[in-house]
Image (tube, rainbow, N blue to C red; front, side, top):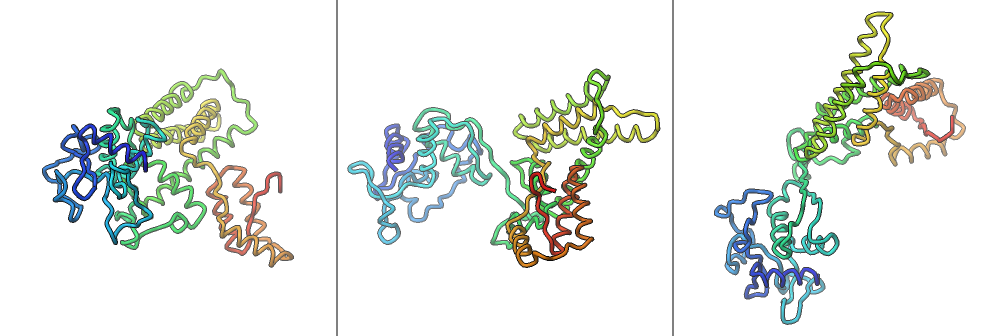
Length: 375
């Protein structure tokens, strides 16, 4: 609070803030050159007030509150402050606290500021005006504004009755990885459309990636990869994909382009396996496939899609309860067969199949838990 009061007085000393008759303080937008022009192109002539009963006290309709004077019966006594002889009893405005806290803990200029696209104006533009008005320095070097999640082409909200939690949207283990890939392959600043079709496409993409990675690992198993073998994949395809991947990340985190770079390698690997399947004497480009695997693993440091989804709390509790109540239960052959299939799927790093088999085992009333070093 003291820092907020100091900022108000600092702005006032530069003719960027003024006090009204009731003791409130407002930012003088007309005195701030470039107000509302960094994140949006504000048309001041079309602005209207949203502050009921206060517009007559403001110099301009665009001016926003820095400090709200105390109102008997409306404000809490224990949530008001004053600075004797300088700032009357009241509370800070919404925008001021962000500028004051950022300055106190991060300095006059911060590197990255995030938020939803709906905060560009008025909140973030007002932060910029306050901070740069007080310090005379750039407030933020890089702004990141995320889009909303849409459910079947409608913005997700409780009022529309289409609000989903992650657990509700992704009831099965395979859904979790698919949702992650859907999000990670989307542009953060655009609306994310959550539909059955989008989730289906994400699942198919993961299935294709997992298949190729399994094929590569199988092909390389127990093989000595010649380090000096000629490979157009190593010399051209992989460097090009990695360069495009890095360029995509540097271009405002363009994850759709980054995803395309990953799939360019998937296509090269598929083409290589297809080439050798046509003739019996054709040899795989093991050096090239190894390079593809390494590159995809490198890309996965960003995507984070190669992992097995852990049990949910409900699944763990169900497993524990089942273990306590049925300690002497004989595990049916059908369940043991599924357990063996899951172990093979994990060995092959086919995570989607492993998750699906675990779900099937759970449907039969059993739970499987992986223990390090266990069998």
